[in-house]
Length: 169
Image 1 (cartoon, rainbow, N blue to C red):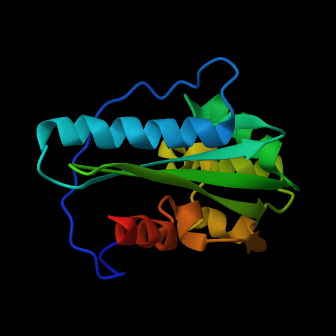
Image 2 (cartoon, one colour; image 1 turned 180 degrees about the vertical axis):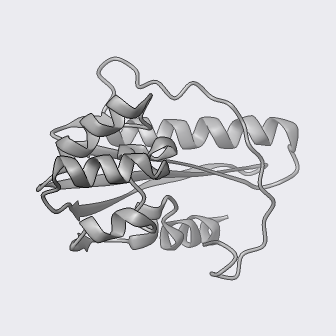
Image 3 (cartoon, one colour; image 1 turned 135 degrees about the horizontal axis):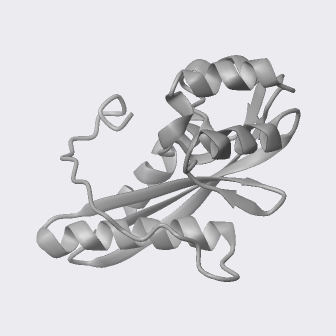
């Protein structure tokens, strides 16, 4: 998505503890993780500007991260079935000048899905490394009739927010 928007970048993977803290609000959670990820890479590349991001799905105030296993993916998809939920992405830029961050929110409507639909989708393997157990840009697109907000946010990186944060740099 960044390349399509004309940004040049390198990708670095880091490990951070992605468990929510007790009482942590979903928006604060994704913003904290974005900052932690960016800081972890910045520690290795202190002269660079480093962008970090983290996305989660929120339904009834509950954070739905990546499913732990097949049963967890089924549980998440059942929770989303026939309902609207929010997708939140925290974005952080860490550079020698400091830290800039923000959170984007998109409302997503999920069709009512049958157990057969859920089994088919989970069997595809696509939900297993995705917040909320689905990928809007993939097979799950057939279950999503409407969104309100940034599509790229739901994919995992709100490009307009990234651009805005980079302009502040």
